[in-house]
Image 1 (cartoon, each protein chain N blue to C red):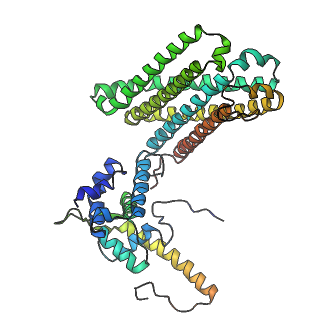
Image 2: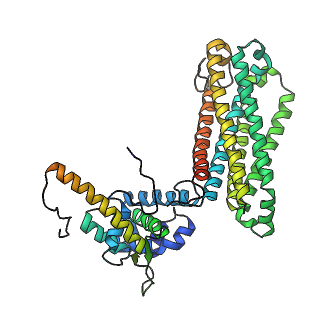
Amino acid sequence: MTAEAYERLMRWYPPQWRERYGDEMAALLEDSYVSAAEVPPRQRVSLACSGLGERARSAGLVGWSADPDARVRAGSLLVLCGWAFSIVAGAMFGKLTDRWSAESSHGSHWVATGSFSAVAVAGVVGCLIVLLAAAMVVPAFVRLLTAGRWHEVARPVVVAIASAVVALGLFGFLVARAHGMSAHDRHGYSALYSALFMLVGATVFLAIGCATGAAVAVARRLDLSRPLVLTLGVMAVGLVGLMALAWISLVIWWATEATHSIGFLSQSIGNGAPYSSSVVPPTLLAAGLLMTIGLGLGLFGLVRIVGSLGDGGRAVA
Amino acid sequence: MPRRTASKGDLGRSNEPPVLILTSLAAGPKHGYALTRDIEAFAGVTLGPGTLYGAIARLEERGLIAPEPVGSDARRRPYRITGEGRVALETAVREMRTLADVGASRLGITGRVAARGVPA
């Protein structure tokens, strides 16, 4: 058995870490076990956990040893990932409530109308913040490209662009097809249209995921000034506030509708697959769960940002 | 109860890897495998490779240990305790001794208890 077999056990660790400690750790494994095949599963799992922990640490996501700017940047990117979940949840909520906002909102309880508006406002303002943040890092991205570092981010960016093109193409096809259909068929009574709608939805969500992945890959490599990192951190804090507002508003809208307008929820899109409920329809449940995951990520990022701003730039191992 | 704040020299509890590694290195420089064997001998604790090198990386980052110049076998690099590491270990040992003394006195235990495999 060769040293490479031991080194394969360390693939979970970040490259810089393997560069520094990889050989020594492989030597320790060689001294401890006759062959790499004899390393027990418990030790393999432990190595994987430690390696992933080191990756998170080197990205500034855990621990306080990374410099504060790296932690603020990591926290901000975590908030961006949380926002992507919220966008997906918001899109599901938007589709679920398109008939509600067109037909039922005038007769609804004022609390439902107000909370629905709050979700919409939080979504629009949040998207504007994300676009503004993207515009602010464009000069740094141009510097990265002119420095000949395109190859470092080429793969995720190309994948994101390709997935966006596919999603837009399918969306255009869906819209064109919908124009020739009755409202009755568009609202779930055409199996073909429903299947196409699900496919487009999945493609759009995949494109959002790829775009977020590309944004994270690029942002981690950008050379940003400290004031800009702090400004982006403050904007991320604002974004978490909007995510919290959207989550609370969604819960209030849900509770109000479940109390005052059970009929709408029982006939909402997705009800019946896989189950029916007039209080907890599956689409709304999925949207709520995704928004909760997004808010959780956002709050974790918020803790990283605020903790890093609060320690006055001190890095503690 | 007053909350302890993390500082550069804060090593944690007595059975935590940083304390065990510094205690082992206080007797002289050692490489990874020698460290695990020594710690097993005096504390009865087996540190896995991930745990050991995670702690080594953190201690080196904090300047509490330093790698020795590489000899004939670059893959078995020994580490030594630094002056700052010695101070941090002394502080940790004093805290543990205070705690042990209070515990022993409240339990009515007299005399010293030998560590595993190490004369008192």
